[in-house]
Structure formats: C-alpha cells, structure tokens
Length: 300
Image (cartoon, rainbow, N blue to C red; front, side):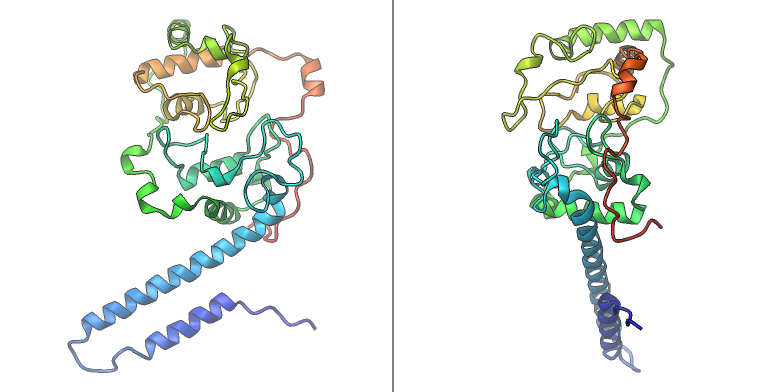
C-alpha cells in the first residue's frame, strides 16, 4: 500500500514546539519576561509556517486554474489568453479596477476575493465560487499578491481612511425624479462623452480612450443587462466612488451621497431589454466557457 505523504509543515511545527517547551523554566520566579519572549517567538514562527502553507496551497491552485490565462509569472500572457478582449489581468502591475478603496490605492484582500468568487461578467473570467472553497479562494489571492511587491510594503497598503464605506441601505427608492436628476448629473459630469447619450459606450470620445499602458480601451456599454463590476446598486455606487485604476474612468469625489444614488438610478434605467436573438448568440456572462481544470483541493 502506498504510504501517505507526510505533512512536513505540521512536523516542523511540532519539532519547533517541543524545542521551545524545552526552554521553559521548570521552577523559580522572575522568569515572566523570558517566557513571554519565547511565547511571542513561537507565535511569530507559527504564523510564518501557516502563511507559507497557505501560499503553497494558493500556488498549486493558481498554476492549475489561473496560469493558463494569467500566465505563470502573473503577467496576463498565459497560453490560453490569445485573442481575449479584454486581456487577462496583469497582476505584476498592481492596478486593480474593482476595489473598495480610493482611487490609486491597492485593493483589500476582500476585493480580490470578490472578483475571484464572482468572476467578471461579459469576459472569459468565470466565477470560481462554483469550483473553489472559500479557503481555496483566500489562498490563491495571497499567492496572486506575491506578483506585486508593494503588497508586502506596509507603507503602500491602504489606510483606514482609504477604505470606502458602501451603504448597504439606500436613503431613498428609485423614482422618475431621481432618474431625471441622475440624467442631469450624467450630462454635467461629461459621462456622455465616453458612454454616449444612451449609455451604449458610443460617445464621441469612445474611440480615443487608452489605458495607463497606451492600450485602446472601450467604455462600458451601460445598456447591457450585466456589468463587469456587478449590477447591484452598491456595485455601481462603488465605481463612482473608487474609480477604475488603470483606466480613464475617474472617481467623482465632488458628488454628494444623494447625487451618487441618483446617478445609480439613471444608469440602471439605461438597461435595454434584449431580444431572443441576442440571447441566442450571447453566452451567459458568468458561464465558464471551458470546463476549468480541477484544482488540487476539493471543495470544502
């Protein structure tokens, strides 16, 4: 019978624990400070071992499930990425569009986890929550962060004041008056220049837009029944507040909370009902176009 593979992380942790325990005084007083130092050393080492094990778990999942598109080096140049529009995210740039942090800031772990979990509707990025457990998702996000060194720099991480609070409850319900007010804001803020008067992404400047790396980029078609960042009111509110890093989409810092919700109502009103021909030739935006390679860890 094939022997089971030893868990080297657990063995290392046990060896360390026995070694530390052997250093503890058996009797006497005045040893509180040294005991506290030993316990703190043990805690740091256990945290390190746990982090290393999580990274290894995330690496295995990434190589099997993510690298075909995002590349082994995280540069968005995997063997399956040819012809993707938009191209897979280049993690080495550290620019994340979908965040709950202010413009220009790095995302929170929960932001990246949300994208992995829910996918990006309308693109080749599937929702992995149907395949990966929450533990797997957390591990692969920690591995993704290793591609950008500033995630390890405490001075580069978002501060408390950089985190955007997205209200779970609306202050008012959508109405014809809020939609009308939102349309005025949409025009006053020059949204029509990119998104067009009907929100279909056909504004007069739509063909001139480029991202931060001089790659042409199209504004979102707001008439579709899905958005890449999510279709909930709170998802749209978040975009107005956080901007989309790496793209021409700015944050509208000068808008009041009421105006943001009015703009949400107008954007939601732009959705156009699609006929059967559209749905016949358009894949489900959250559907996995190719069966994903099963990750090494089964769903918990």
